[in-house]
Amino acid sequence: MKKIISIIYILFICIFLSSCLNQSVIYQSEYIAIVGLEHRIDNYIGYFFLPSTNDLGTKKENGEEKSIATVLGKTISDVFSNLELSSTLTMNFKHISSFVLHESMLNESDIMKFIYYVRDSDKLDINFDVFATNESIKDIFSIKNPNNESLILTMLIEPNLSKYVFLSANPIHYLNFARNYLDNKVFGIPLINIEKIWDDELSLNGKGICFISRKCNIIPDNDSGYKFLKSNSSLEYNDNCIEASFEKYDVKYKYKDKIYIKIKAECKIIYSCDGIEKNKYLENKLKENIIEALEIENKIDILNYDYYKIKNKSYELDINIKFNN
Image (cartoon, rainbow, N blue to C red; front, side):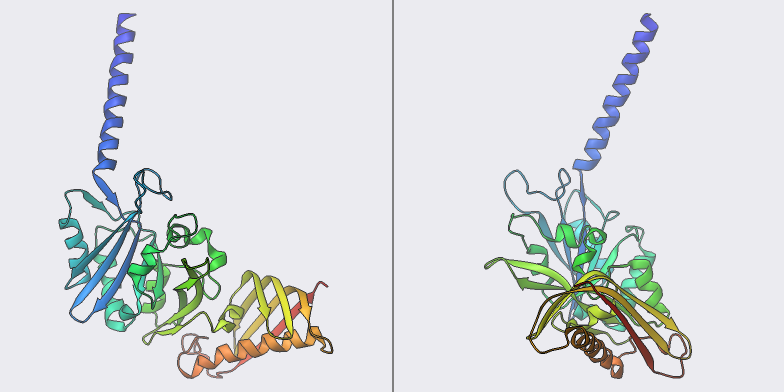
C-alpha cells in the first residue's frame, strides 16, 4: 500500500513540475499574431502585433490595449532579429495568422525577398494568410471596435471565420500566394482599408482588392464591381432606381478557346422606381459592373489569358438570376 501511495505521489510531483514548466515557457514567450511590413527608402519596418497570451481577444487587466512593436532593419531578416534582441523574452513566430504587406512592398524585388525569407527562415511556420494595404499599418494595428476590443482579432487573426467581410478576394494562404506569384499568375488578395463607421471611431474593411503580378494594382473598395467576379454568400446592389439583395452568388470560370464566366444567384428586389422593368434593369446593371471591372485587362491580365495560354483573348458572360419576389 505504501508503495502505491509513493508511486501516486511521484506521479503527482511530475505532473505538477511539468505544469510549472509549461507555464514558465508561456510566460517567458511573446506570441506574435500578425506582422506588417513596409519598405521606406533604406529600411524595412516591421510591425508586430502581440495579443495577450492569457486571453486572446480581450483587454489586459490594467485596461491597456495589446502591444504593437515597431522595428527597423536593413533587411527583412534584420527586422525579425532586431525584435528578438529588443527583449529578454523569447519571440515566438510559430503562430502568426497573417502578414500585411504595405503597398511599398508590392514590387517584384520586395515580394521575392519576402518569399525567400519565409522559405529560408526556421522561425516561421508557413500556415498564415497574406493581405495588402495602402493604409498605415501602425494605424491598422491600433483600430478598436465599439467594445474597445481590437477589431483585427476577427479580420486578421481569424480571417477564415470572417470571409463575409472580404468581398472582392478571399484570404489567401501563403503557399498559394508564393505558388501563384512564382508561376507568373495574376491573382487577387484582400485589400485592408480603414473607414469611419461608428461615430468618430475607425474600423477596418476588406472590400477592396489588390491584384498581384510582376506589376501590382491596388483597387480600392469604391470600385465595387470586382465583388461580382467572386462567389459570395450574399451581396447587395443599389443605385438611385433599385435596391436588391443577392443570395448564393456563385461565379464559375471555364478556360477553353476563350474564358467562360457563368454567374448564378438568387435575388430579392427590395425597392425599385416606378416605370422600370426591374428584373431586366438589374441584370443589365450587374453586367455593366462586371464589364467595367474587367476593363482593367488593359493594365493587368486578371483573367489569366497568358497563364492559361488562351490565344483568343475574349470572354463570354452568362448571368442567370432567379428572382424570388
